[in-house]
Image: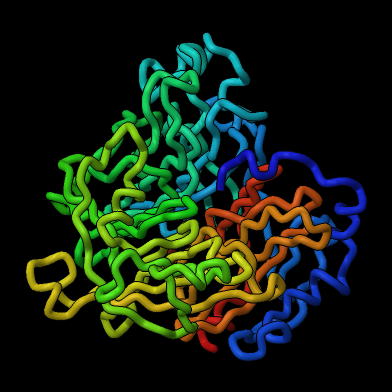
Length: 483
């Protein structure tokens, strides 16, 4: 999500609603009652949080790990707008994990930067490792921070800035080799006062203990990047784009685990439906490239090579659509799942899809020869897994993660001005059944983002972007594992 959507505090009546409206928002958390076909209820009623931050099922609790403005171990300030995030194991320390966390900032809004606006401090700290500067002054505020977290004590043991000078680091994805791919959701350039073009992906090792060299992975394309998911078997990386006419991309690296060596960027096309418009909008009914798609409907797919992927025009998705690639409405979260039977699945969210324009969840199943010369023999399949027609069931699905028991974790990112707007964390089973995990009760009503589980599966980490919390949720996750 772009930070300009919500950066203001709600009024006192909204605050009272978020804290005290047990009969309404908590009641609406019961998805099964709003969607009897696809909703289930593994937990029952959410329990109101006396602190007014996070409503959870009975038996669960949360800890606030950090807040925007906290001082980090490197002496810098925790930047605002935490967004996408992943948790990584620590070699030889099963009791610890490392979080790599995005900050969706671009120096254009009301932001908290790591240096308190002190240009001298920024220059002394970055020592030339800022990717870009705004108006030849401060480093661009976007980037990442790393956290070493003790799962037993529930305490941060170290925290530091790990990437700086990038713009609107929205989501991204963890790699099997222990790094975080942080994505710029931006096409900012010199015309807006920046020194360089933006719209790239950068790689941040989870083991980094200081600022990394900011190397844009340009063959992965210049567009409004949202998230990334790596197929651990093939090494192919699937990418989403937060744009009204977005494509679904994959990147075939020249060398596995060596993304700086380049590769081929492609976009998905639906076989026998060139230029498919998949969003199920009512106004598309007369569009010859659109057709209504039912939940559970599947399509064979192929992939189109894309050229000039670093174009300064920022028109990659429009050119891809002209080649016959499928169009989606605002692709955001993406997550890879490897099932016990060896089957691979990639889920992605189309935040603006559906007749109500409040969200679709898609699944792509790669074929056995995915990415090879033989893939036409057994093409990958695209399936519409869920489409919400009721805000109470799911609204504005954004960041995604795979839970240890195989379900999809869905962060809601609604920015509706409706007074009863509430953001939830939802779950979805592999069969497409939807349930509720948590509700944001804070009066700012910020989006959930960055959901990820600790390597041992004991803790769900998540960010609330505004006012800027990083949370750790613990509880009887085994109830879902065994259900």
